Length: 222
Ligand code: DX5
Ligand code: ZN
Image (cartoon, rainbow, N blue to C red; front, top):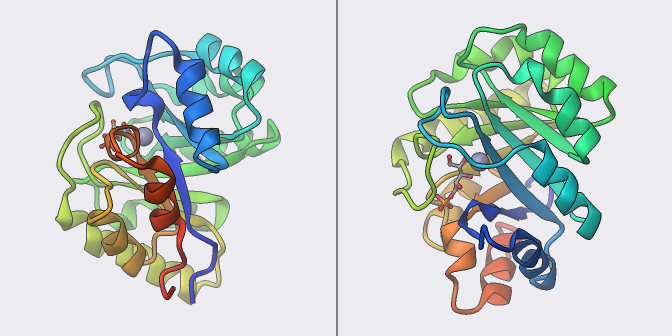
């Protein structure tokens, strides 16, 4: 029995960057409630995307749940800006050196849900000290920085391990996978305990987005 109903959060990184408002509308028109916003600083990852000003502009035109994924070396310097811009959930990586516990607490104090993220090469147990204090754990299933990469199957054991800890400790955080998630790989993540799936390329390139969304959001035992 899954703890939460499955949610698909399309990443607008794969949307139309000359008209992201339209990309957000495409997500809402597919009957979805979440959208994933990838924020990159050119340091923690070798790419740049967009900042709080863009998030605030999108908030003006959308009521969707904004799942904001900060790929930044110094996320603690920006959480206020993203909360003010209208983020509903802000997730921060475990890898860089900054006050992680304080930043997770601050995100909640700002009225948002918080999340902790691990890269493919980061062992699951690094997040153990924070597990009881998060609303979401995001397991990267590609090396972050770019959309359109292939799903890393070696991340599946890590997802399973984190799901076991969640059950053993009666915790309620959502468990999210991000990178290379499509109609083939989403069921593998769900089998291991994921209830939240990010998909950029697979969603925006789907022939029938409504059908794709319905397939990802169907309960595992349907
Ligand atoms: C990678 C981002 C992902 C990415 C997913 O750095 O965090 O959200 O955009 O894109 P796809 O689904 O194309 O792998
Ligand atoms: Zn992401």
